[in-house]
Length: 142
View 1 (cartoon, rainbow, N blue to C red):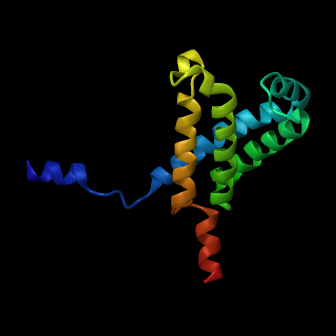
View 2: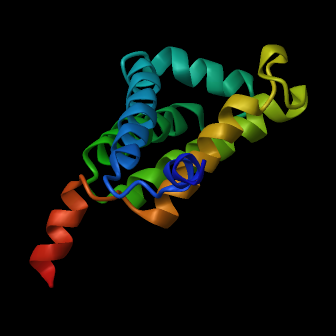
């Protein structure tokens, strides 16, 4: 029984979880950002309809932030900056889209955006992890 409990609570030193998390959430943001980037007019119209001004400028900022921030997170290259860019995008989404609808994502609430926000804050605080360009750069700069 003791062996089973030790196996359950044993820390993971491989740190693949950082890479898997970064690839998934970074890819999610690239996906959403490219949708905005390749339809800036439509994105600007949508932003205007929900009260984000100036709509075209903010559509450009949001789309580039999500695409390049997502790529930075995925690659582990200046990861904290990419995570903060995406966290900012989630704060805007929470305020303008989800907040009026409560928590439940099925009713348009903040559940999805808040989950991504917490993940991006976690990545910004903890960094990219073992399998990243950041780690290589950090070693070279020492």
